[in-house]
Image (cartoon, rainbow, N blue to C red; front, side):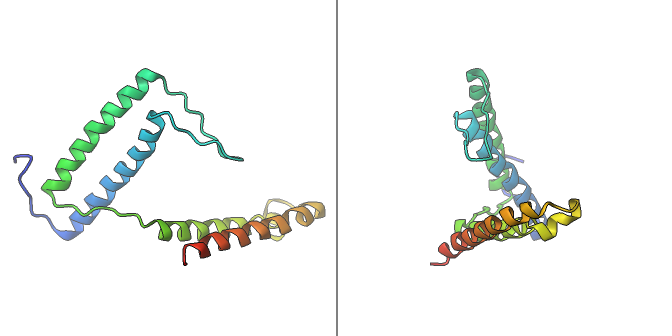
Length: 143
C-alpha cells in the first residue's frame, strides 16, 4: 500500500487507532517542550530538565519522525483529530481536584490514623479555601 493510499476501516477501529495515536502525539508535545528546554517551577511541583543539548536535538529529530509516521497513518486511515477544548478540560480537572482536596479534610484523614485536632483546625479551612478557588476557576470558564 502506497503512503498516500486510503484504507477503508470500520468506525470502531478508526476510533481506537485515533485515540491511541492522539495519546502518543499528546505525550510527544510534553517531550517536545522538555527538548526545547522548558520546565515548570511551581510551589510543590517542579521539573528538573536535565537533558543535554545532544539529547535535546536527538529527541526533537525522533519526535519529528514519529509525527511523520503518525501523519501517514492519519491520512491513510482517515483518522479524526483529537481536539481538546480548553474550557472543558479545565472544568474536568477542577472537578477531579475538588474531590481529591475533599479527601484532605480531617474527617477523611482518619483512614490513615486519628489526626491531631490541630491538624484539622489548620488544614480544613485552608482546604475549603482551595476548593472555593477551584470552583471559582471552573466558573471562570463558564463566562
